Length: 95
Image (cartoon, rainbow, N blue to C red; front, top):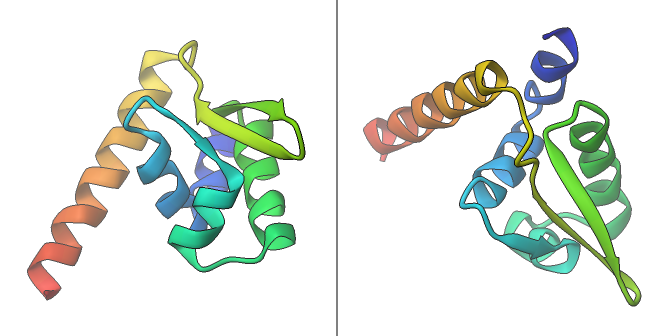
């Protein structure tokens, strides 16, 4: 649990997870553009998420594609769902 909580403490990583949580596969180039992050910064963030077991990666020519880990324990998926939902609700209240 500690690895999961440490991985989601960063706002950029949570934003990347929110994009990946749709179940699709996303190129790191898309994540970079949508999150306004450099390639090296995005790669570092994705490495943390990958090491925590939250996402899987696949090399596609010069790019890497990421997706939600379909084998993530349901307890961990529930934590991510709750955090992303709470953050989304807070953003809507502020807007």
